[in-house]
Length: 302
Image 1 (cartoon, one colour):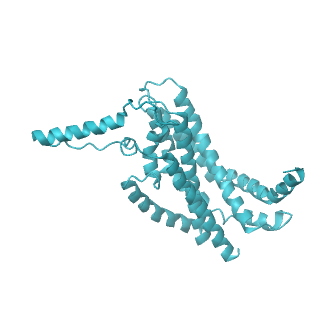
Image 2 (image 1 turned 180 degrees about the vertical axis):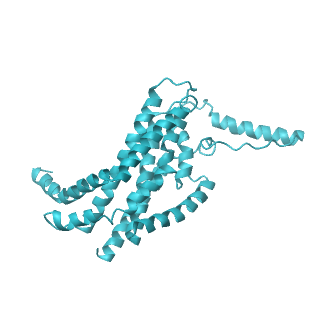
Image 3 (image 1 turned 90 degrees about the vertical axis):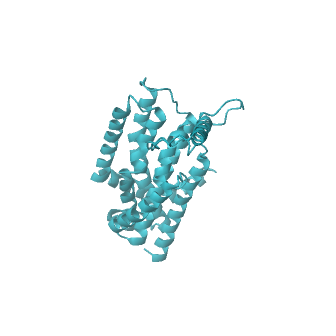
């Protein structure tokens, strides 16, 4: 592509760039985003302090992203999505500030992109420094390293989930055209569905189950060990459980009361998780939700 092609592409993107810059300035001047950023940093700092001496690095990383996937920052992301197309300042800019009319796609794309950038900036500022501190420091915990592949896939999947949650709120905001009504609908519909998905340990669909599976994902490597003689500790644990159950039935011993695992102690359930399928299952909703938002917006001829 020659210089003329680059110039044409830049001219085509100018309206979207102008709207994105305007909306980002508006977002970071709002008290919602400012308080969210400050609270997210404080909560990450408290998570590091409380788990410094006993949380291994994979569990520490999963704990740091817990507020974004489960609660409370899940609600803030939805609020940003539902309020996107009801921004009066953005509509005024679309009508009067730009030098030429913009298309529906440019308008919606700018509104979504600005909020996606804001969400990712808050996530990066709140989580990445805390993760680096706990990963590089000499903490009094057992060795349980996070692989480079696991960190990239795990954190990348969390980013996709955040974009999916934002896109869901964006779609509801376009459909209902009322930010608070859209928020209530998402909360009262999505949380029960998410609870059912979590019951069946569907990390490909449920952010709560994904959060439980993240320690397992963080431990994964680029490829499986080449040596077939290496024993998987998870397989040993399963065999031990089966042997204990057989001996208990054979000897007539009473069954020991089952101890419920902690939130992040589900490695056996997620030992066969495929990060590629998980990432794909969260990428498709982003495309589908935004596509439906555009179709609804175009149909109403706003």
